Length: 326
Image (cartoon, rainbow, N blue to C red; front, side, top):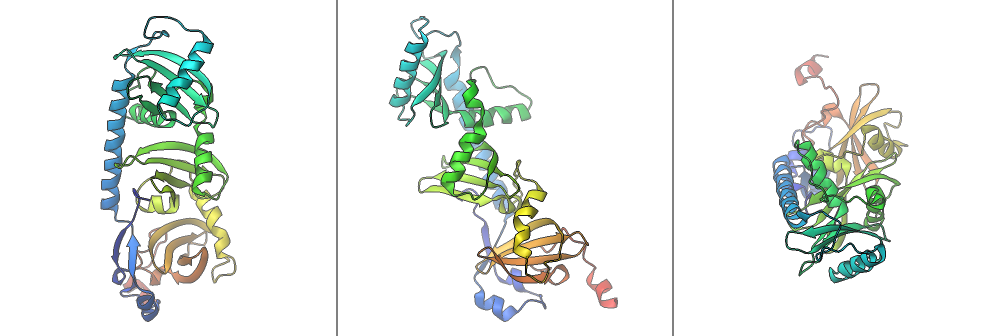
């Protein structure tokens, strides 16, 4: 994912001072260890936040105007006339939208008509008849309104979609998730914002499994699971630790720790040899599972994996001096 690409650091950070790891093997597999550079991730998040604010201000400016349900000539058109005009506006805007429901919201300050439309494929928009036409995705408007509420303010009237059919964003995100190849039953979803490049980013919640952030790029969809997202100090609102464990636990079957009642997991690091995932067991023991191609290839006890990423943090590890005395 363009927004969420992890920064590369040297493999030495992963393998140095690790007596339990076969260093020769690790060096031979080698390459770079990609770990969450939180400063870089934070800067990227701030850029996305700035882009969201910019888009919000543009939307507020464009959608400001007369909210009487009349066209630019002051007339009150019939539902049939509204439907025809809304479809014409959507077509003029270049949307591949067959309008199922529509509403005339009024006019903008530039005396352009303002419509809300619900497309038969599930997408929804507020659009204007300006030249060129302006379109605002209902999911993005909802995300901006949520951000404004979190900051203690309210979104102006008609700056969010109101048609009932446009209120179920999870259905739309689920269709995007299928296009992106997300392998789960989607039970929640929302828009997160846009990258500085203008790519739209969505969060996908999965039933009983790890969720994802998906991004629509010029080359198609990309997806990043929440295990990696959270490892970069970003958030997944729709994914719980229990769901992450439920999706991960089958990988432990048949391994040296298949008796571990896993309670928490987190991503520590990744490189060409796989991902390194800390596993905290109900017994209090902790391990790092090396996972490649959706299979566990190696298990390291946490007390011998302190140089993998920043080491285990879910599991309490005895200090080296204390361990030596035992």
